[in-house]
Image (cartoon, rainbow, N blue to C red; front, side, top):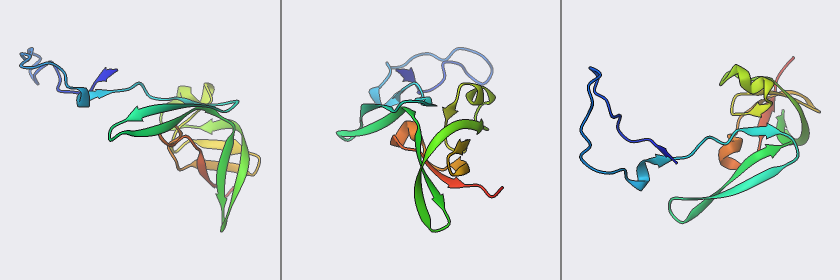
Length: 124
């Protein structure tokens, strides 16, 4: 778990005094870095007695081309503005450009949050 509460330092660099302990609602989690590969998923309990399905790895994307949606195989990650290392490690995030069996596509969903990859075809 990661603490996403207030910083322990002031703007001047001085230390802030701790007036209370961490609260559960201030805790976060490590990001799910969805990779290209054999599909693997993890279910996570979240607030409000709800669950999220996180995609740890996937090789299928729902690609929107004009007025139809096609299921395409993901071949490779071509570009990812989130982090240049994600291209080398084949990690898919929202906004990444992926090579699919239908052509190049930009990811519009958040696979680490929704468990699926939705994308729109790019005009080449």
